[in-house]
Every structure is written in structure tokens, then in C-alpha cells.
Length: 250
Image (cartoon, rainbow, N blue to C red; front, side):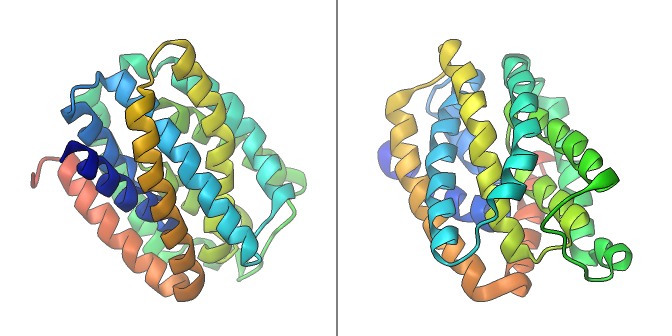
């Protein structure tokens, strides 16, 4: 039953992470419930995230959504940030962090619903960043990398809004970029957790099978359904998980 639970959690998390974000808020508690220390649960979850994002990248690329130049530009500062974040992950202050994350997620939901970037960008799309926009992007993704390396949960929402404001691209394109950037900095974060002995390989591989399957389904959903349905999934995910973080429901 525990193995079935892990696979099911991975499937759900992979789908949610690819379409929106916050899937780690499903998998992390389950890993901790199964007896893993918080830091080990955090590190073990990275194996699944790696498999999940590789699966999503391959499927997005097969369907024509692949932007390597933009991904590498934004992924490099995120890698540097993730090394810093993963090194402090062991001392995670659970209660304060969870409540703060709940607030951040609601704020992100508001940004996604009202789409303020449309007002400023006037529906322009930027697949190549130059000048001040490039410098700001590098700084923003450095801090996103710190957060992603630190705990990861909910980083998908932050990436979606950041990429929307910076590039003005559609959510389908943004999701394809998002999973590639996460894959890049997850490598460096996972290495830090491995060095510190905070990885359970058995559970990690099992979870990875579920996550990668969910990611495949999620990337198909993104391409087929488009922005309207992606926003609906994001809204539901944020409300449910933010409420859980604040203890509104079990």
C-alpha cells in the first residue's frame, strides 16, 4: 500500500508540477509520513523532480515547444542560486515557512488571474532578452534558484509569473521553459543532497516513475487545452494547497 501511495502521489505531483506548480506539497508530506527526516524527504523528492522534468521537456520538444537559448540564459543563475538554497535546506523552519508560502501562493494566484504583465507588455512576446530586461531576469532567476534549491514546493507558480512578466509568452510556452529551468537547477540541488547523505534512492526511484508519468500527461494537457484550462488548474491547486499550509483543512 505504501508503494501504491508513493506512485499515486508521484503521478499527481508530476501532472500538477508540469501544468502549474506545487506538486511537492503532495510528495514531501507523504515521504515524511513514511518516516524520512525532512531533509532526506526534500532530497529524495529531487530524484522524482529530475525524472518528471526530463519527461516533460522531451514531450514539449516533440510537440514543438523548445527554447534552449532562453532556458540556458535563465537556468545558469538559477543553478548558482540552487546551490546556496540547498545548502541551507537542512535547517528549514517548517511552521513559519509553510505559512509564508501560503501567502506567497495566494499572491501568485492573484497575479496569474489578473495578468498584470499584459498591461505593460501590450501582448508583446520576448523570446530573446537584451539590455535591462536581461539583467533583471538574471537577478530574478538567481533568487528563484535559491528558493528552488531550498524547498522547491510552489516554485512553479513563481516561475510562471516571472516568465510571464519577463517574456510575455503564452502559458503553454512558459510551461515548456519552466520545466527545463527546473531540470537544470535540480541537478545541482540533488548533488548537494547526495553529498550530505539526504537521499533515499529506493523511494526516490519509485516516486520518479510516478512523477515522470504525471509529467507526460501534464505536458499533453498543457498543449491540448491551452491557457484557459491551465489557469483553472493553477487556481484550484493554489487554493487547496495554500489552505492546507494554513491548516484550514487536513
